[in-house]
Length: 256
Ligand code: NI
Image (cartoon, rainbow, N blue to C red; front, side, top):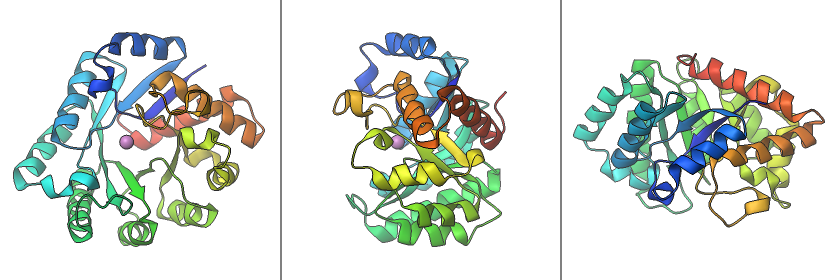
């Protein structure tokens, strides 16, 4: 069996005590690659450092909407330099978060657009964070249709929003939420999404699947996400692993 965790934050201090054991469990579970996602300067550098250390780990660099106000010209310049690193295969996570509103919305939007400009210029895929902000994110992406590609990570919209995202050319990232009983929107999306647009992820250390809900999540548990998707789509977990691995490699381009 083969799986890719397309969204993990194993550079965080929550993994400092036992990171090697976490990676060993991921190996054992058949996780062939892990994409470690940066969300500010420190975590972007941490992601790159992990990718340098492990052949099967890749990194992204970007500024989360929570910290949008920290995207100074200097930080953007560093992201641009890091983006040239051979193990940095996408930009993000970036986007809009209207749930916690830790940065003012106009600042979030401006910083999102700046990073989208960089992605267009460098022709790199992007990892989108969205919380309660589809009404603003989708028009921003629609305006750039054909010039950007990427994934809407931890997709929690309904089927209609999924279709709009597909038209823009985006992939749908499904994580542990799909295993929760009340996640009927996400489960409906999983049943409808075209096979070639589906990615799986953990978003660890957060959003552990049902059997570990509330505890620390880790890349090995992406198997539980694949199992639930297989059940919902009436196929095998092997088939979901294979398809989502192919999708990831095609989207991220630079991977072997
Ligand atoms: Ni994340």
